[in-house]
Image (cartoon, rainbow, N blue to C red; front, side, top):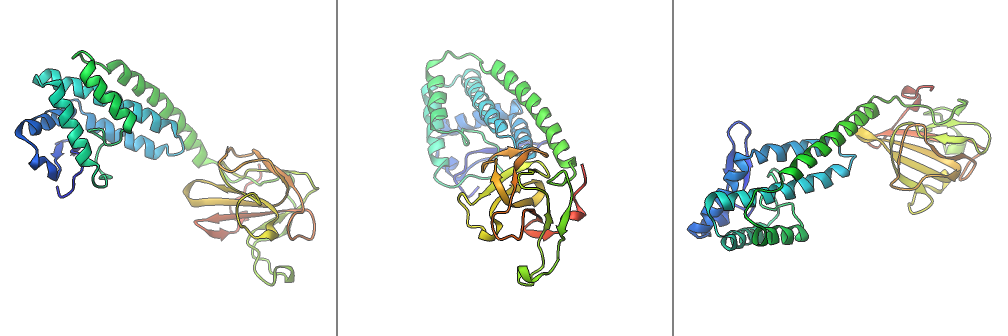
Length: 305
């Protein structure tokens, strides 16, 4: 291959080992060590496990804990592969470590291949490198990491199951109204002089000052104005939530905001209190719903809960 990428494996039924350009410039003994290392990965079906991890992390993107478990799994998998390769091929620990170190240096001279499974320490940080080489040189040549692999696998399976069900429930949620008492004073698309004859981008819900404002659906708070962002001052105190599949919801003219940026909230959680901040004619909640940046009529989606 034309780049100095770490060796990687592709294919499920017939795994194929793809070698980097610098492989041709290694000595024969170094080439033999790299081939032995990658064949050990293939015999252990590590490439399939690595791809499975990628799928799990992609599906459960909202759970950062899975990435941490994946890193632990990769570390244990590499340690097991290192010791298996050394013991099964009677390779000197020093030669093995030096060859691996050389390949890691060469592989990081260019960008990594996004399609490669993370073997040869491609996804390891510097501390992981140090631990890995220290283990190769100092630990006795025995197979380790099986208990770690089993533990991480079952822990990740339980975590994946839990988060998968949570994601299914999340996707199946219907949009709920952001207030309990539904009284609409202005509809989507309404044109008035107060808005300089521009169509209304949302709906206005009226109630008394201090009425709890609820999250219409599960998501992540990405804006709490006027803390850091340059939203239109006419919105007053406002909250924007990022939902799945490109959806966003906006809650404006709040009297107070009870959430912070980066906070994950569930449907029905209190975001703040209804108020009259910003450019208004009275106490109300201005609510907008947008899909991929395009405002839509909230009444086409909201359900009375």
